[in-house]
Image 1 (tube, one colour):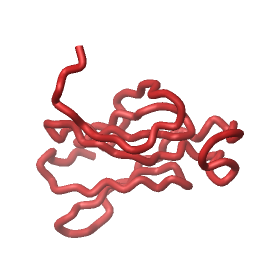
Image 2 (cartoon, helix red, strand yellow; image 1 turned 180 degrees about the vertical axis):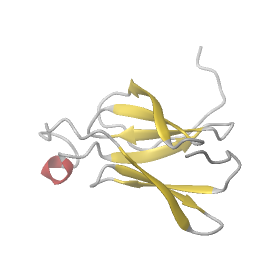
Image 3 (cartoon, one colour; image 1 turned 30 degrees about the vertical axis):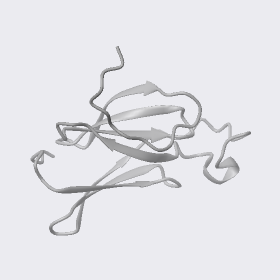
Image 4 (cartoon, rainbow, N blue to C red; image 1 turned 120 degrees about the vertical axis):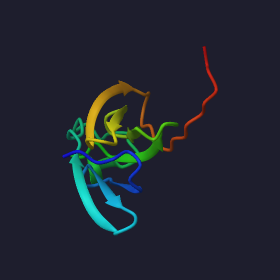
Length: 111
């Protein structure tokens, strides 16, 4: 499924089910749902505890500056998924430290 990058989107994380919904904001219709990998099952000492142990617990979302990529924080996987906004698929993932949550984008270089 291919969608134009300029299409107005709303991205909604569903923490318990471990999914990300893509909505067209003009029509308010659900375009797609992305299922993330399940959680690691070790819920001890985690903020969601037993409640979401089977979920990756996607929470925070940030959109890149060209609006071609979304970044989703997974509290139960300690990682960030990189989502292509044309295909609605995961294109990369990286470790983010324990229980990443809120996110933001900055154009400032940290190098």
